[in-house]
Length: 192
Image 1 (cartoon, helix red, strand yellow):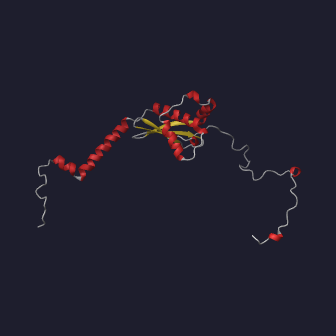
Image 2 (cartoon, rainbow, N blue to C red):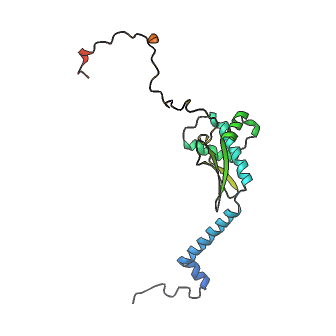
C-alpha cells in the first residue's frame, strides 16, 4: 500500500453544493451562468433605434468635418472613432450642400441582432452597405470612415459607345512640335 501523508486531512463533511462547486462541471456551470447574466444584460440594454440614428448621424457629421486632416492608416480612423463617442457636432456646423448630398445619395438602416444592433449606410457605391456603428450595452460605438460615404455623383461616361479610358489623345499635325533628328546611338550599342 502506498503511503499517503495527508490521508486523514480530507474534508469528509463537505456538502453537496461545495463538492459540486469544486468539480470541473461545477466551474463550467458557474461560468455558463455568468455568461448568461452578461448576455441578458446586453439584451436588455440594446440602444433604441432613435438613439443609434442620432448618434450615427452625429458621427457622420464629425467624419465629414474631419476629412480635411491627413489620416495615414487605420489606427488614425480607429482613434477618431473612439473620440467621436465623447464629442458631438451641431447640425449647423456642416456645409448645407454636403448635408443635402449625404441625404440624397446615402441611406441609414439599422439591423437588430440578439445582443446588439448595427447601423449600415447604403449607397450606389456600396449597395451591400457599410457598417458605421454598433449599439451594445447602451452605447453606440462608431466605425464610420469617410470612404463609406457617397457625397457627390458625376457621369461616368458621356455616350453609350465612348470608351472608359482614352488610349491616346488625338494628334494634331499642325500643333506637333518638331523635336529634331534622333541621335545616332550606334557607338553605344551593346555597351550597356
